[in-house]
Length: 167
Length: 189
Image (cartoon, rainbow over all chains, first blue to last red; front, side):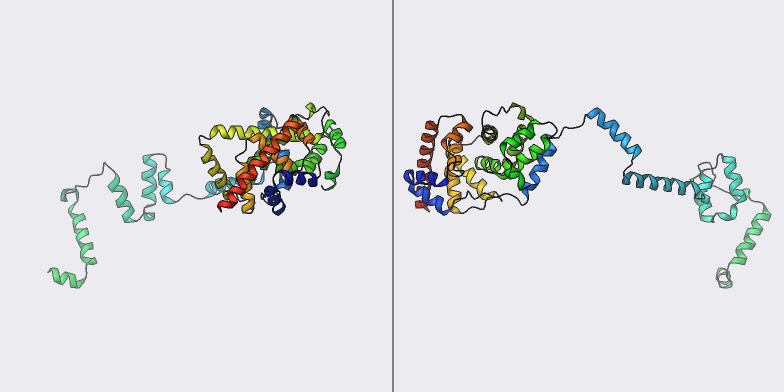
């Protein structure tokens, strides 16, 4: 390379003002990000290295996953197995047992044999949702004995104060 | 890494021509020349991100086309030639995209310089870059190689494929123009 002195002398002879400016500010004022030149080599090598064949890479990736599954895949598979195992081993609740009963007869027999397991509200809810249930009852549907028993129960349940108020 | 900067061009060429040592040779080439090539490109395209793109394209080309280097010129002149061509090609593409007047271009250059986080030059340096923006691209290459890199006319001729006489005339013309522009700006401010 030509010595900078020769270049500066030439500049001084052609353009003295510019030569003075160069003397004051010899650099161009540009800068680069920190560690730019260190990282440049990696970026360039990433580009020049031959890329693997696409058809190969798919099989290689699948094979690699089978042989050496990555940690997140193993973790996810374990979680899924746990969820399935818990779901299979967990006993079904009463409502679920009813819902999974195979036929209407099964349902009826289950309900009649486990009547104490259901609250009155729940039975009421279910019967209200059943279309073929006749809600319009009349006194003819009950025998005299039934009515007497009901009234006795009602009188027994009612307080003395309320009974006095009614009478 | 620092040792690689002192490896001779002959050694670099020998490594790059040997398939087993090609990678080693290219690493040594990067270590020795990447900075010089970067600054040469940066002074032409001005912004760091553009310079980075152009430099990477240039170095990839060097790696892939090294077999076309016949050793008739010096290694660094061959590298500079590729870098210069890549930068000029980038500028041509960039100009095709711009549908702006010359005045707008000047304004754009000033804005770009002040907005660039990697330009921390003083006012005089900014004025010089502003003035350089008015030169044709090829004349700017000549000015930069001589003014900033103190390159001889013969070396410039090897890189640019232009006669030394033409280069000398081009540089003198550029210097006069830049001085006039810088003096005018200094008087106005």
